[in-house]
Amino acid sequence: MKKGFKALTTGLLAGSMLLGGLAAGPGQAEAAMVSAKFGTTVNVANENRVIDNIIRTGKSLMGGKAQYSHNYVPGKYMDCSQFIYYIFKKNGIDIHTRDDDRQVKLGSYVPKSKLQKGDLIFYSTKKNKWDITHVSMYIGNGKVLHMANTKYDVTISNLNSSWHQKYYVTARRVIK
Image (cartoon, rainbow, N blue to C red):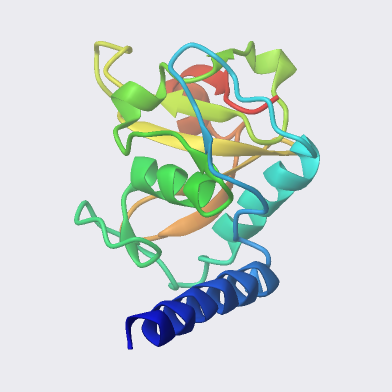
């Protein structure tokens, strides 16, 4: 009985791993999870494809599919930093935190003039500009993808809009 059970469970495990690998698509990790560390960028193979997949995952949540909330329910209810955490993790990059004040310590500093797709942009609406209150992801052509607020949820905004200009603090590159 034990021998038959072991063979059955081994076969089921192998089959589920095979099916899991075949079912992976956009928004799914292509390889093993990569771990981001504070103060360093993550090297990934096919960086542009990974970044495009992260952006695609974020865009797939537009239109009310994900809603702004501080009560984190992955893929459904998220605030801005939880949204960034979620779209990175769905694509195989664990940034370890859903806190924007900690996310601002990830990767390496990027001047605003050197932004690339995938860079994280941090904002503060407080007098102490280093108390981060919002995060977005640069997607190219002067646009950012973010979980904006309860009115707009996941949206794409112009980085040159007055709000983004006024409250911009810094940008960080997590993937290279």
